[in-house]
Amino acid sequence: VALCVLGCSLVLAVSGFYSARDDVVELNPSNFNKEVVQSDSLWLIEFYAPWCGHCQSLTADWKKAATALKGIVKVGAVDADQHKSLGSQYGVRGFPTIKIFGANKNKPDDFQGGRTSQAIVEGAMTALRSLVKERLSGKSGGSDYSRGGGGGGGGSTKDVVELTDDNFDRLVMEGDAVWLVEFFAPWCGHCKSLEPEWAAAASAVQEQTKGKVRLGAVDATIHQGVSSRYGVRGFPTIKVFRKGEEPEDYQGGRSRGDIIARALDLFSDNAVPPELMEILSEDSLKTCVDSQLCVIAVLPHILDTGASGRKSYLEVVMKMADKYKKKMWGWLWTEGGAQMELENALGIGGFGYPAMAAINARKMKYALLKGSFSDSGIHEFLRDLSMGRGSTSTVGEGAWPKITTVAPWDGKDGELPAEEEYDLSDVDLDDVFEKTEL
Image (cartoon, rainbow, N blue to C red; front, side, top):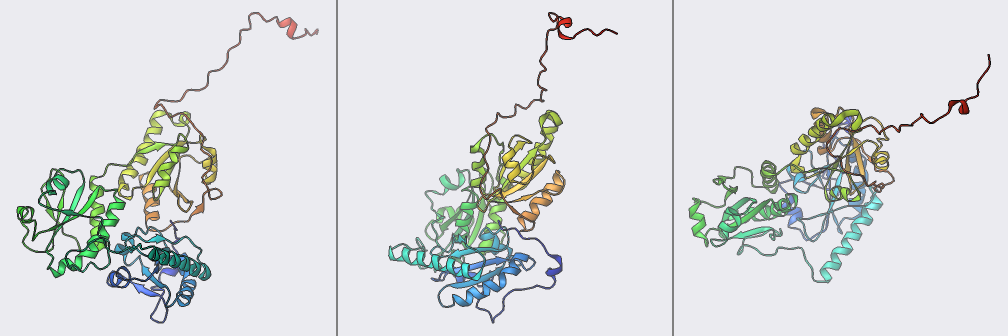
C-alpha cells in the first residue's frame, strides 16, 4: 500500500486537484458507473486524498499524462477521502492508488509503473495494447448474462447467484454463508438501475470475504413461492439471511459502495478471528503473500518475559487481529533474535522488543509501530495505516530475507542452559600450580 504522510499545513490549502480546464475527469459515485463501468474505453484512474503529500506531488504529472493520452486512454481521478465508498469498493487502502480499468471494469488492475508522466503514459499504452490483443482473440469483459432486458450497464453478473424456488433453501437457508438477496422483477425500473451496482458489489464481496458473504437474486415474477414466503410486495426488495436466524430487511443504500460496506460489516460480525501464527519456516510467510497487509510482532526472548508475559503480549495481538478481522490481513509473530535477517530487513535490528511491523508484500513496503505495544498504541497504528497515513520503507533490498527454520514455542517458561560441572577430586593441585616460597 502506498502510505501517505499527513501534512497538516497543506490540508487547509488543498481542497481539490483538478478542474474543468484539465484533461483529467473528476469522478464520483454519481458519474462513475456511467463514465467508467458502462464505457468501452480503457481508463487510468487515480484515487487520492487532498491531504496526501504524495498525491499533491503526482498532480502535475497526472495532468500532463492525461493531456498526452487525450482521445486514446481516459484518465480520471477520485477524491477517495471524500468518496470513501468508491475507494472501498475497489480496495483502496492508501494514497495515491492508481488502477487500470480495462476489459472487466469490476476487477481493475493495479498500475505498477512509475509516477512520472512518461511512465504513466507508457503504462497506459501497454495496458491498451493488452486490451486490443484480448479483443482480437475474442475475449471480452462484458456481462455474462442480463435480466431479460434489464439494462445491465456493463457490469459482469457472474458472481450474483441466481436463486430459485428449487435451490433457495439448499443454498441460502442450509448453507454457512451470509446472504444478501435481491428480489426483483424484470420490468422494474429501479431493479434495472440496481443491477450493475449489485453485480459489481457481488464480485467485490465474493473476493474480499472469500465467499463467506454472497449476493443472490430472485426473479420474483417466476419464483413466487419463495418470494411470497418472505412477504415480498415491492421491487426491488433486499433481505439479509443468516443461518439459523430470521431474515431481516436490508436498510442500507443502493450504491455498490453501500452494499459492499454492509456486506463487510456482516462478514465482520460472523467471521472468526484470523490465526496468529509463529514464524517457523519459509512457509510461514505464505500468509503475507496471500494477504493485502501482513502484521508481524517481534516479542522479547522467553527468558525475559516467561510464559505468562509472552501470553500477555500474544493476547494483545490477537485482540487486534479480532478487531481488524474483516480486513483479512495476515498475522505472524516471532521471538526476538530468532529471525535476525527479517528483523534487519524491517529496521528492528535486534533491540527494542516488543516491536511490530505491517508489510505490504506486493509492494515490499513496511511501516513500524512507533507507539506503545498496547491495545491503544497498536489500534492507532493500524487505524492510520487503514486511512493511508504513516511513513513506509522498503523491506530489506525489496525482497524477502532468509527465514530460519526454528522449533515452535512449547508454551512453557524458558530454561537457562545447564552449566557443565567438573569433578576436581582427581586433580593434583601441586601439579597445576607451583608452590611459591615466601
